[in-house]
Amino acid sequence: MRMPRHPPVLRVLLLPLLPAALLVVSVLACARGPADRGTPGAATGASMAIENKGSDTIVNLALAWAEAYRIVRPEVSIAVTGGGTGTGIAALMNGTVDIANASRQMKDDEIAAARAKGIEPVEHTIAIDALAIIVNLENPVAELTIGQLSDIFTGRIANWRDVGGRDARIVLVSRETNSGTHVYFLDEVVRRGDKKAKDVFAPETLLMPSSVGITSEVRRNPNAIGYDGLGYVTAEEKVIAVAAAPGQPYVMPSVATAADGTYPLSRALYMYTAGAPTGEIAAYLDWIAGPAGQEIVRKLGFVPLGADGSAAGGPS
Image (cartoon, rainbow, N blue to C red; front, side, top):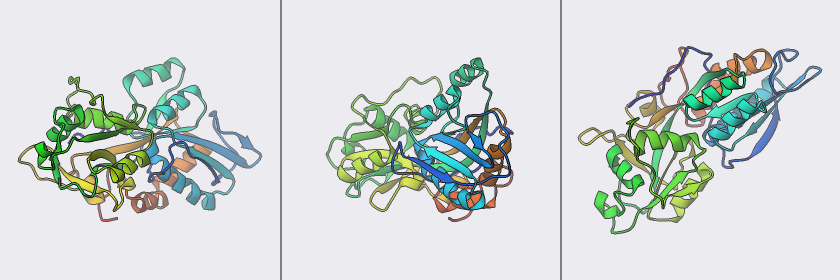
């Protein structure tokens, strides 16, 4: 499996997911003195506001960080909003947020557009996530290869009997196109990691605005299949073991298999800032990258990063 690149920028750690895609939560947290930056957050006296927006995969984690940081730095207000990776990146380029959460790396055209506006995006790796393939609990299928998943989500395989299941039409469930998770799944599963491939999701695919929408449809529909960050998966969905190719081992997603790279659908999660962070934003990112922030990553089902920015193994 190809893991995303990790440029030598400031490393941070990520947090679990939140049920509502556009939930906005402001929590007080942090302050090392007056704000020292030229980004959207506003400072009043000794208080400070940080705007944080983007990936729904990361939103629960970001909320948990903000709540914990409130205890550490009660003079800083952190507003956390979901809406998808694309939404967060657009907000960063428009100068309306301090931190954009992303479940994929910025695209070349996004970086070029930001630079055209005088913004130099800086990437901070915050955690590793395992993308789980989920089906209804009644579905007898337990294992699929990346190739089979590609054929399923493009519509080349349309009946569960063709992969060892019942004689029933497969119902496809995906995130919307502004989601970083959607882009990752398109690149790594639908197109099998081939940058020259032009495969797309089957037109009948149901596009959901949030991770919760995917899990809800899979629970309701015995013929549905979808994907979600491991932190969103509950005992009410069945998780499929995935093999990178025929003849290779089928592996279940977990903190351990994502950390050691044996699960083929593991990915890095990111935060982006407009330029190198300073002042309160830098202090907050440092805290996320430290032991307290990393422990929250672990508790929420993500893989924390080691001191060098790599995945830190071990059970959750």
